Image 1 (tube, rainbow, N blue to C red):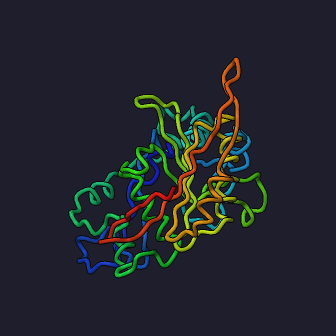
Image 2 (spheres, rainbow, N blue to C red):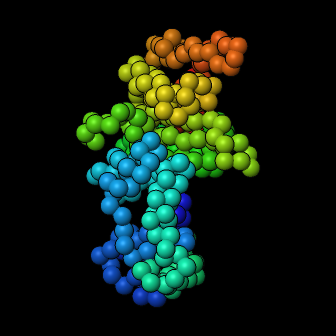
Length: 292
């Protein structure tokens, strides 16, 4: 099972007034279902998680922090590491039908034939809750709406090939005390699997304080250490909030700088790619204004 294909759709039965034919499953008490296709097949026996994590320790980040969560999204490196160990341990079953489950496409076909757009989850429902407001009532609302916006590859953020939220950004310790980036992502060189840029965002639904600037720069340093390996040029950072004091913007100019060297012979460079954006809700859309 390739994790890239894990979650194809999330569906809701009971929120909408549906007849029995339109319901995906008959049990009204089940709010969400996730469907996925096997790649290459379903295997009967699972693997112990300790064994999985030990198979490639440096690749696993989010799986180690899978705690008090319903779902997680892992990046390409972690996905491949998980796929590799599952496939390697089940290689003998690939050519035969023992110890594997045959895929039944009935449920998938039923979902694909449904024409109700209400089943598709997007940020529109979040904006309905925020009706007549210029800002979100909860941080998760802004987070969800911004992820939806980023998926459209529009300005001022441009194209990103991988996006996730609440990605761990500290050495391993008790999960409740780990730092987590509000939004993390990366961009690949077009037509290749090579990562060229990393994205980090810190979000505040209301007013932004100086502490937020310190926090995102801590994340920038984490990405530089764990992902870009000394190349700050690969990192784009954003603080997004509804309101800013002028002193916070000035503070970001002072703190949001890093000096580093790259290439051989060494070239001394300055990183200053921290951008400050003010958001507001207008006509059920996110509007951004960059503060300089």
